[in-house]
Length: 219
Image (cartoon, rainbow, N blue to C red):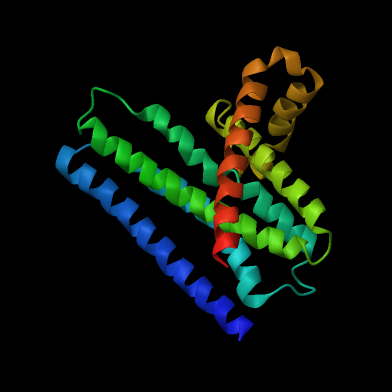
């Protein structure tokens, strides 16, 4: 019975996420057709990247883990793409008073993508925490969850200001690791790095644990 309810909840969640994604895509296409500008079409690519961590955790939920998909490998792959989910929040930087479309439309457009991206990320994080609870205590799982969200905010900084992306860990690992290590060795020389990482990390934790608390109260 419990397994059936879990599958039903997963199906409903998937349908909702698909509907939200189609709404976002529709808004971006409508803006392109009306204004004849491609300004925000890139949001569809950002949303696809935000979709990947959810896809990875969903594969685990549906098929489960086996010897061919060890836990560490799953975690590394998931953590690599997880910052793409909150990254879309920073696309609000592109909001301009003077634009080919009304500012209220662009605001709704970007927020729709940002919220959908966050949902992909937060739901996948809930999957990961469920997995971790099978191996460690709930308290340890909570600590790791908080850490993941701060790591995600650090990843958002790397993407937004230093223009690194998830693929660079393969294409240019030395350059990526150099930028990361420099900020840990000499943190006081990079106040913007740690200012954004800490504040965005707090915001993401507030948002995630609020949603999780509401979900738990409902159950």
